[in-house]
Image 1: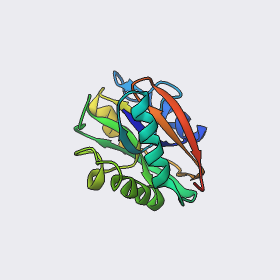
Image 2: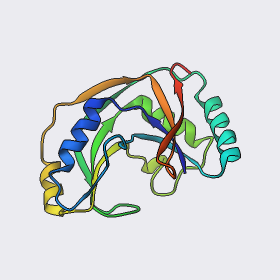
Image 3: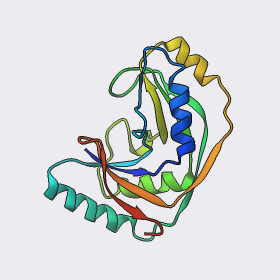
Length: 169
């Protein structure tokens, strides 16, 4: 599965790593693997990827840098896929939501995860002790804000970035 992701500042990935230690028995994201998905784009071989990236780049044309803000810790008590609960950093960004909606016009939304169900977030940990997840959600954080100036095409099957696009696109 290919996706288009926001490049994350080290302050966000470091925070996610620190918070994950407070959810015993949870599956934490390894360092360097935290993501903020703008839109899942589909899957396939190299030829399919070239078509997907080209279509996404066309859809990104005219996209300016936009503001993003991590506002706190929340959770999905029951995940759409994989272990639950999912503790995450909540993200607010009208620009990110608008971009997601635009890309949903070009790429079919993933059922129960995108379109109207889209919740911008950075996963901290999956599974583990539900009571610990609840305590983490109650923790107050100082917001982290940044301007998104780069988006990353990511190959989830291989766990690596494929290419990047600088904004304005």
